[in-house]
Structure formats: structure tokens, C-alpha cells
Image (cartoon, rainbow, N blue to C red; front, side, top):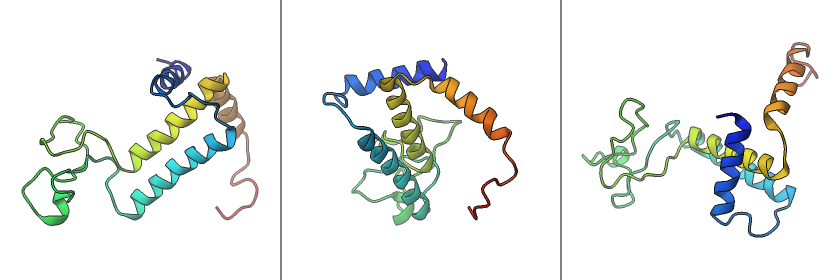
Length: 139
């Protein structure tokens, strides 16, 4: 699947789930993307794993209370379905929030008819031609 095909699938899912019933403005889209970036920062600040599934047993994460329940354990690519009945199916963590950023960007690209695959290639080629730490900024 190409990036543009994935963007179309993401947008179709958003439409099917009612997120495009009314017109959305570009500032609203940017604010939603920013909110996902902020959520990734909060996960980092809270010291959470890159990807985890919270425990819904009493609203307490097992790693924090030392119980023998499922825990708010990191994602295990070797055993992706290793969850107990109390473990949420919703992925959380920095990686999940960054995925939400990408999903929101791709959703907008498909809506606006942006060939994001081409734009990414053009922009990457341009960036490769730029001087080391161009612009003289500190970060």
C-alpha cells in the first residue's frame, strides 16, 4: 500500500465515523494535529513506554500498585495479543500519539487532494541539499 492509498483509507475511515459531517477549517485541523503532538509530549513527561495498553482493573495500572494483574505493560511485538481481560485494547504511549499525528495529517491530505507521497519526496530531496544546521538556530 502506498502512502497516498493509506491516506485515502484513513480519510474514508474518518468520514465513515462521522468526523467530516461538517466542514472543517484548516486552523481546526492544525489544532487537532497539535493536540496529538502535545499528548505525545505528556506521555514522555509521564515516563510512559513508547507503546502500551493500560489496565482497566479498578482504574489502577498494575505496574504502579504491584498487583499480579495484567499491568500497563509495553507492547510486545513477539506476542501482540498478550492481554488479560482487564487490559484495554486502545494503544497508548508516545508511539500511539505520533501515529495519531500521522493519521490526522494523512486524513487532511486525502481530503484536500494533496499527493503527500510526491510532496514528501520533493521536500526530502530539497532538505538533502541544505547546508549543515541551516538557519543558524539553536534548535
